Image (cartoon, rainbow, N blue to C red; front, side):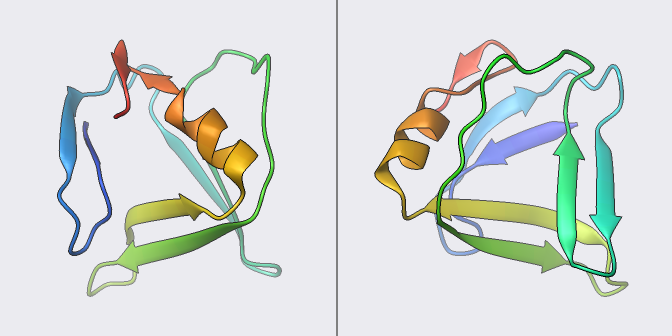
Length: 92
């Protein structure tokens, strides 16, 4: 799976190339409350961060998930996300 970073649509995306998909990415949607969970790895997290953010969800013509953009309004969350590594690459 190819992962791009940026602010779609309208932003300039930075490509990360192929993200390892073993195990496959899992997406769970709680239809009652509208919660969305995306799992990218089978490893246990050692740290997480919460905060306020603007979230944009893009779907295709069939209503299937295409992208999720998260723009933190919380400075601590923005700092945490800016230090996340994916596939051996650091986000810029």
